[in-house]
Image (cartoon, rainbow, N blue to C red; front, side, top):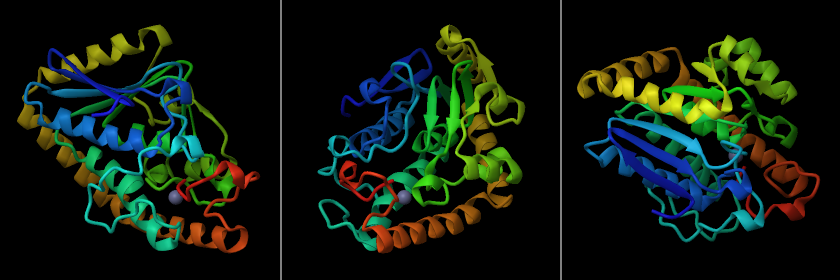
Length: 277
Ligand code: ZN
């Protein structure tokens, strides 16, 4: 495992820490592969019962890192059976394989991990940061946390891991996407998008206490419970809706490329090296 994500088990709790605080834990390729390895380590750690996903520093995650300096993991071997997207010209084909693996597929793997997971969110949880929090079963937020998906302004209909209508409700999902405005932790709590809001200084302790309480339950029953709720969520249309929205997302990348030469609309194309967003 690399150093952009740390994994540590204390008692029965596996702590997974995003560790790019200098970049507000933005997700470059390296961090995303490291995170997948950390979740894998947690899954295979027989002593670990519950995971806490958190960010080092002030912010949980500022989203996908599309800056040239952020793309430093392209040498990593794909973990899915999609064709190899490494080092290729950005085309619809390459972008589809890349986003299927890193932005949709990995989040699904983490969501379906058969042990409880808790996201402890402080500060910013923006764009792709939402994918990480929404992949977890529970979300604890500090009182300074906020959530936003600004990618409509970049010409895309929301992030790839498209949970918005299910976690916000359709009408708020539209407002959240149309405006790109920040949703404060308290508002996210009121609509049921996060489980609890706690003072910033108490976030780690609150996540640990909640994880410890859950870890006291039988492992097998927890796994079945998670599977049951996820199955119901999928019956409510999450999985099929996400397939449709992912296809529309790819359409937006194709359209943006046609009109601007880049898969996302940006004011300064020099800031982008890859097509990923
Ligand atoms: Zn995309």
